[in-house]
Amino acid sequence: MKLKFHNFEFNFLKKTYIMGILNVTPDSFFDGGRYFNLQKAVDHAFRLIDEGADILDIGGESTRPGAEPVSIDEELRRVIPVIEALTKRISIPISIDTYKARVAEEAIQAGATIVNDISGLRFDPEMPSVVSKYRVPVVIMHIKGTPKDMQKNPHYEALIPEIIEYLRKSIVIAKQAGVDENMIIIDPGIGFGKLPEHNLQIIKNLREFSNLGKPILIGVSRKSFIGKILNDAPPDERLEGTAAAVAASVLNGANIVRVHDVGFMAKVVKVADAVKFS
Image (cartoon, rainbow, N blue to C red; front, top):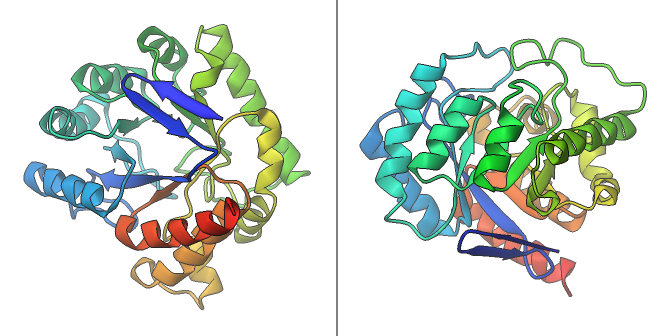
């Protein structure tokens, strides 16, 4: 399984790829405010690349549980200068983490080459046509509800089948808009309308998502289910727990892992890949 776009090629039969998180927000659950400044954001981007990131995922709106949405203009004000400052200076793809079509389009025009949509193309009806127009890969994620209300007692009759069906419908939405099905990546949405036990079941049964025939991205980095397992550890004490969740995800079929701590997780992924591809 390969992903070819622009001047990039990812071969998922050879390695697991690392997506480094760059939140240009004041309120993200782990790194909110740290890079809410153009120079700090650019410096951190170069650090992530030096540590082994294969993709940079830049987001200008927090999607932590309970988060309030920000305006399109504010989101653009946060992300576009960072993308413009990086695009001609780096040799890895930039992903724009947004569910808003206008933000995605302006980010692509500024140099982004991947769209990462937490809504699975559901929140903005114009998003599928933007992805199709620019022929960029799109990550379609499962979410139950919205970031503001998704963690208010989420319930499933059949967890894995329901998530798979949601993703299957999002794939249909994409294809109907003219998106190349070889440009679609799926994400089961760890923590997005999921209880801790749901997240563990997703990781344990990740291979079931391969039936959709798409590369699988997963984001477990420092999330609250890890903190709960580790006696309510806060986000800055979830590094080792994240490493365990990343390793389990890789061994269970993840093709891309989205992480904050790229240098540390690059070593975890390298060892997990040695087992996975042995």
